[in-house]
Amino acid sequence: MAAYAELILDQGTTFNTIITVTDDTTNLPVNVTNYVISANIKKSYYSANNTSEFQTTINDAANGNISISMTASNSALIKAGRYLYDVKITSPANSITRVVEGIVTVTPRVS
Image (cartoon, rainbow, N blue to C red; front, side, top):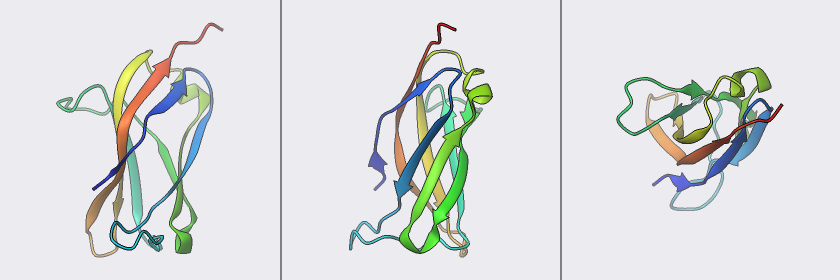
């Protein structure tokens, strides 16, 4: 089961957070070497298209550390409001697992 976390994304600013992928049974880090990571934002569960995507990076594969980020110019393009997101990993054997999901609130900018 995916972990649940709420995120706040300030419109027009740089966003970055680190996630540690762990095994549900042992709670030990998953080695994500050669995994593909994706992280998407949608307005609702039923939206056909993504509102935006986070950039993903594997920081420390052996210890399951990945990061999701967004540039200030990309976050500026998202209308302020409440969205849904998830982070999925795809193993070299093509097994897909959702590791984190939740609500991302985009706060409006003043300047």
